[in-house]
Length: 358
Image (cartoon, rainbow, N blue to C red; front, top):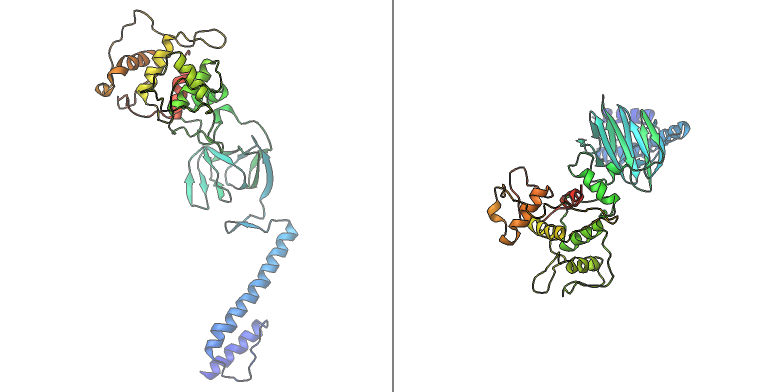
C-alpha cells in the first residue's frame, strides 16, 4: 500500500509539476492528497486553461463576456439597432438580445429558446440574455421597439439598423394574428386610445366608465372645456377624463346614479350599448361634418334579441342592446351569449368604436 501511494505521488509530480508536496515523509496522508493537493492542482490547471482560452479569443476577435452563464459564439457578430430596426434570420441561425425590447416573429418552422429549452410562439417579446435558435427549415424576423437594442447573431441574417414600426405591429402584445389588431392600430392612429407603457397595449385589460367616455369623445372630436365635472360628485375636475364626462353629461349620453358617475368602475357591455344608443340619438357628426353613426332612425323594427342569455339583460338596456346588435356595433360571443354584465376589454372597445360610421 505504501509503495502504491509513493508511485502515485511521483506520477502526479512528473505529469503536473505545478504544485509540489512539501514533505520528506513518504507516507503522505490520503486526506492531504484529496483535501489539499488535488483541489489546488485543479485550481491551478483551470487558471492556466482559462488564460489560454481567453488569449485565443482575443487573438481571433471573439467576445469573452457571457450572459446567463452562456458564452457568445466566437462566430457571432454584434449589431446595434435603433427603433424600427430589424433582422431577417435564416435557418440554423442563433441570436441573443443583450439589451432593448424586441419581438420575434416566426414566419415558418420553429424558433427555439435554448436558454429555457422551449419552442416559442410567434410574435413574442425576446427575453434579454436568452439564446435563441431558428430551427432547420425555419425563418424569423426580429423587430426592435425600444430606442436602441444590442444584438448578437451567429448565422444567416439580413440586418436593417433602423426603420419604422409597421402600424399592423404597433404594440408588442398585439400580434398581427390578434382578432382586434386592425381596430387597435386604427384607434391608436386616430388618437382615440394609447398604449399602457413598455410598448404594450394590454388588449385584455378592462375599460372603466371614464376611459370609455373619453375614447368616445375623442372619436367624436368633442370640443371640451377643462376643469368640468358634469355635475357629478365623484368626478375630479383635474382628472384627464373630467372634460369628456362633462361633454357626455351635457348631451345626455351618461346619467350616473344618485349624483355619482363612478368613473373608475368597469363599463359593462349593456352600459356601453345604452351610452352608444343615446349617442346615436344626439345626431353626432365627424369633425369634418359627416355622419358618425348610421342609425336605423324612426320606423326601425327590432326583430328580437337572439342571444341565449337575453333574459340576463337589464330591462333598461334591452332596447339599447337590440339596437347595438342590429347596427353591428356589439356582437355576441361564439357560445351565443351577449354577457351583458361583463366588463368590456380594451380590444373590444376599440373594435366597437371603430365600427361606428364605417
